[in-house]
Length: 169
Figure 1 (cartoon, one colour):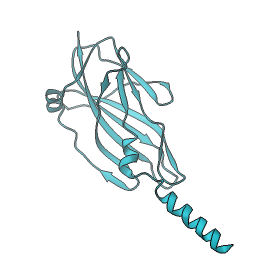
Figure 2 (tube, one colour):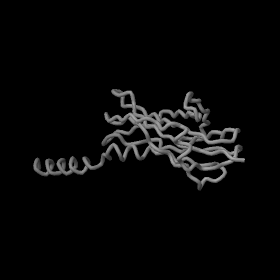
Figure 3 (cartoon, one colour):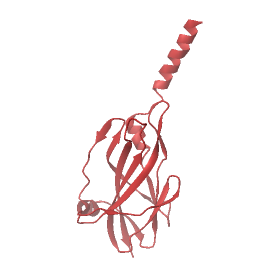
Figure 4 (cartoon, helix red, strand yellow):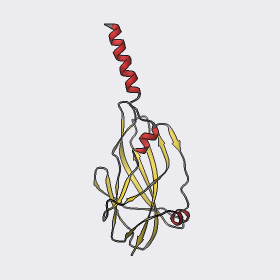
């Protein structure tokens, strides 16, 4: 009987070890889906920069807004549109642990790169936010930071993305 219990326990441990995704897989699940309200099929592709996750941490420098805005193909929209951001609410951080999305911050970076301007985002439902496109025509770079809760011993996890948008007539 003890041998059977030991075998079952060993099999459980072996199979459960593969149940925890790697940090890269966990962070990949945080990638936001960014679309225009007027055309939900049009995706704005975000680029990941820095993160802090399960003890791993990267610090990355954002590109200068002028360089980013001149070299990226930006999604074009008019100044009456709205942008919707959808983010996964829960990410597995251990065998029986998950981290929940705590908050997001969105900032717009002008071409000069001098000041980061806080953007007001409206929460539509769990995991979906929306903000108004700037009324002035031009190219805009945004920085989105997703903050996930910790497990009591840690401050939490975060992942940062940047993306761009061009407001036309």
